[in-house]
Length: 397
Image (tube, rainbow, N blue to C red; front, side, top):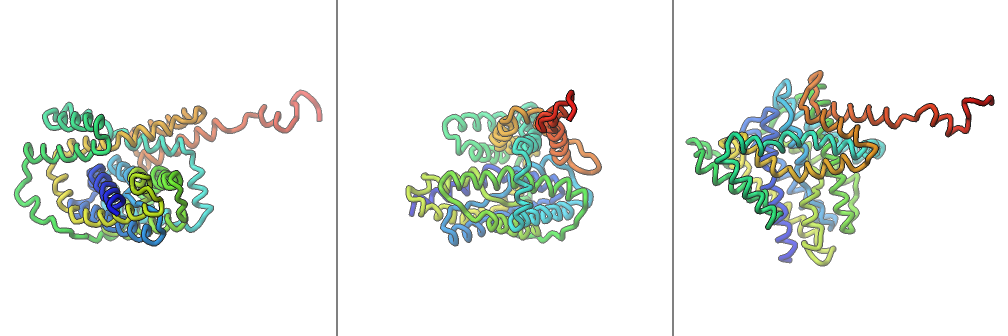
């Protein structure tokens, strides 16, 4: 019993400490106040924890639920939508509805799966690129604060890879406490406090936020999450799992959270032999992970206060360090197929440009640009069509 419990607790702590700064940064970028960002963090932790406990106990499969880290990075690379955070929340609800639809209407799910992996990976890489350059910018602008964090992360990456980002977060907290003391009253109200956000909807936010959020969540989290479970011998009900995560995302969105999905990296800790030698007992690890997430929700307001009082570039640099592995994986996926490389590069540079057009963000246009070029390159030439029909253009029928 100790082994799966410890594996689940470790998965939750590592998952939280590694990317909570990315989540808060993303929510702040699309207009959340400190209280709304803390509420969003609280909501996603409690709901995804509750889902993990319920699904693991009910199915006896180590189904781990996580927030959408690529989705948070997408928000961090976005701009403030017209209409503010309420419009962003409306986009979160639209994305959640699409996830539910992918679960209950199989043709739609197949259409999502038909998006070329290379283009989805390239779009994700473009989203992550700007944030992953933050450590470089922080080292130049705030060397006394950023360089110790970067070096600590690098050495931990060599000797204790799973703890590299949590160690960087811990050292950042120490550096901030020493160099930039919290202003009076910053930690006065750190009790959990959910804040309801009335959603508003706009076409621009649906295309610029909801669709890219849905695509990166499905392609970069849900599909790899299923692959991790399958690699360890588990076959959950795919449609039902998508429905549950979509409904959970919708509930949490009303309190400021962006999206949740099947875990990929932390799922390996709960579904692999590290959790328990007996595969039938590993579900306990995912339940323990979920319960730990619920407890970590109690720290959401304190985490938001810490981030708000820290130099923004320093927080971005920690988020960038946390996402370097994701960027490497996305670039590898984008370049995996030689014939798709140029369309993938077009998708990447367009998404990385940060350029908005017609009020729609660069991530969507990157996918459009790459998709159009891929369709052109795959369109059969006239000679190929004639050859395939067995007709020679120089002979009469």
